[in-house]
Length: 222
Image (cartoon, rainbow, N blue to C red; front, top):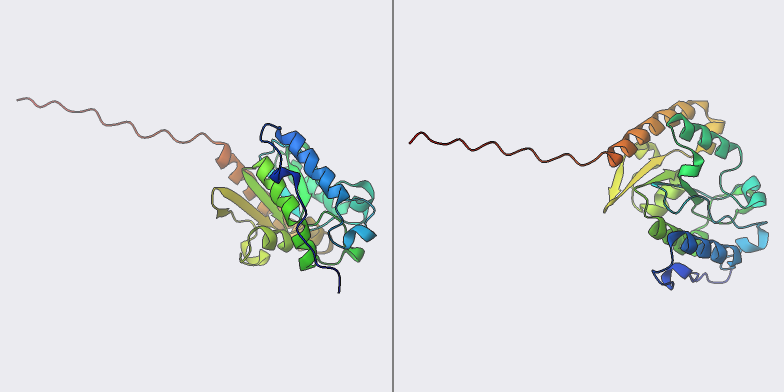
């Protein structure tokens, strides 16, 4: 058995609020790159904290880095990332518009599923990123992201393409792009779901409806 995993110290919990969000995101990334809280640091080439602006309205969370991400230190740069780019461009978004990260910040050997202790070790990093960015919506790419951020949610096959609200934040689950690389039928599902995501983002951006005008008071004749 491996040594017990303790939650890593995340600078976000200790920093003054006077620091801007970009600086706080960089400090979280530096902590990720130094992290040795689970055995994945022994097998990774590079940690993959995430990439994107601290002002992003939309945040995308996947499962874990793959082989190419492990080499380059950036998320979603392999085949699944190329498909994600196409899906975003299909709804008028650029990768530069969103913050992209994963549940795990280091690649599991052989791209196996994340282990619970690995998810727990990385959880404070993802939580800190969400807290710093405060996105209007979070795109959950696959079941591992769904289970991590909305425990107890229905399975991905039941809730993909739907808006799930937890408190004041909205989540939008969909299949992981990698799944569509091996199942062409899922590509059409993903395309439809991203169109639904576009509609949701448009609703979030719309100004609140003005309250109806009060009916003019009618004066009596007597």
